[in-house]
Length: 279
Ligand code: IPD
Ligand code: CA
Image 1 (cartoon, rainbow, N blue to C red):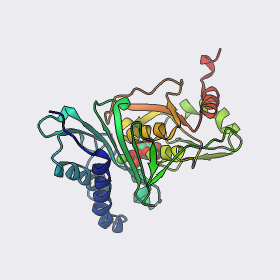
Image 2 (cartoon, rainbow, N blue to C red):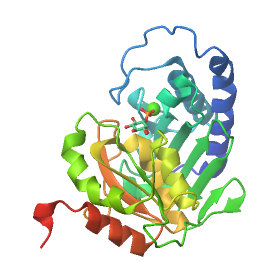
Image 3 (cartoon, rainbow, N blue to C red):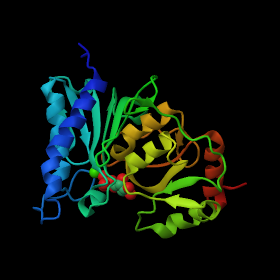
């Protein structure tokens, strides 16, 4: 029998538990940490990543929910008797480097779906752990920042736009030629270092676009923000303008262009198109 779960409520409880469990660790973050190995997403695991993941899992299990966890730290883990009914995709801490260095921009991201596919995400939460603000969305019910409904910016001028571009890459020479024109047309370029939160900034109009065309970002980092962006009324597609249909898996990589409105989205796609694709 399919379980009935109030996921919006459960995700808020997960957030509260993450905040509580990481609070003591944040106080001693500058002390040397034990080596905890490499997580399923391929990055070194920090204490705080594990504490946040444990907080999420234990909150959900307290509700006796059967589910499959898809996490950047532990990978894919099944809980309960019918774990294929429901998938919880988590990046327990997005922006771990910021957190460890004391830069105030890091988040927890959790998405719930009926299948391990981005398009099946129905409930999402991204919480800014430094500022304490929380973005949520439920399919067909809009997106919210705390209690306020959010909408993306209506700006269509590239010259005025604030655009996020993820430039974290050892292969910058591969993507740089596609970014030159866009950067040349944009006065305000940003990268804050936690992609889930940066996508939420497009959803609530803080920025006008955020793009990541490195082929390096995991779906676990952006599954929740994908729904938040769409429910807010902004657009997120592949760099070619096609719908994003990625599998939810800590090893699955994704590239995207997210923009506040169709005009800005079309403009960015055209500015970032590789020369050989142009007709
Ligand atoms: C990282 C952040 C960062 C992006 C990296 C991600 P993490 O997430 O989202 O902005 O450039 O590719 O790995 O590792 O802190 O969860
Ligand atoms: Ca992470």
